[in-house]
Image 1 (cartoon, helix red, strand yellow):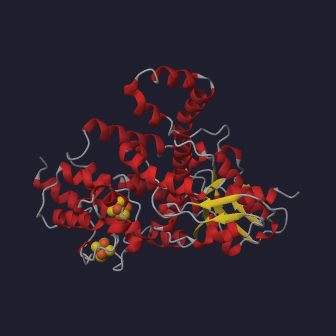
Image 2 (tube, rainbow, N blue to C red):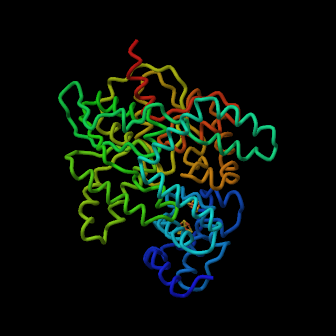
Length: 436
Ligand code: SF4
Ligand code: SF4
């Protein structure tokens, strides 16, 4: 049982009344919520969750396992924010509710909370340790050990879920982008823009090819690129999983590191990271030391598709005779409201047949680490995405977020679809190279 003093401390994490009372209970968000769609229970809907959080804040409801379950069941996909006519800041509410849950005795067991905290705060947040772990994983994936282990595990029907979760581990890159990229990269022609580039944490070790593609395309678009060696994880995974203090610590470190350089825009190719770095301005709004720095930082953050669609001279793209469909990553379409720019970019590739994906803005089930921590729920959400993808008959599905890319690759293999999964920038780079 939580003491009244601890409870009072925890409740301070909740947003103020202005945020908590915005909801007018119209229900327009319900049809867009993947978890409500699964259960049809009011408490699994955005409106229901807001009511639960408000009741906790007003002292009308005690913290309970059921409350924790509903907050963790939520994907934090923010589709409800897009649908809401009242401008409800739902993400803020659920993320602060998760801070309370992580610091209280409700929700998952102490040991599970400790493991999650260790992985987030002592591995993901410490890039040298993340790289060390990634090197072990690279060896495991490439030495044959992985194949043998999966073969052994498949003998046991009870290990099915374990094998599925294991296969969600992204393929570790041979060369990490933080090591393969110089701190400064210059274009062949005179630079039009000075760009700061965020390499990300998981992106750096498991999707470094996308980072290399991004730099190459930027370079060809007359950009001088700064990739600060001392940058750290943006903190988004921490903020979405109840570790807001660690998220702030990481954000401050990035604000200090990037402020040492002069640049026009800060480019991210990961929807989750870009969305959170745009949030730094709100995170430090009341911090006298960091408020101004965060404002200057956030206003220059751009997703790579946002930057190229608006500033990139795309006439260097060559014909690609492929049928492509586009999946909207939640943190790109719902958090950053970027839907037109990636499509605009893809439509500029000569010969490319861009076909619509039904429910393209419906979450794929990746949602940060949700596909691991809530694997069964994520599987149900993935099934819907796979059906819609299959119906397109496309050769390639494009997305702008590493989590979605990993989840879609996993789903395509599981459902036996013949479809390549690419990041938007990788397709752009492919068309730039296709100069035949
Ligand atoms: S964030 Fe997504 S899953 Fe959570 S309540 Fe909103 S729509 Fe539903
Ligand atoms: S759409 Fe907005 S105002 Fe309406 S119920 Fe949902 S969260 Fe509340």
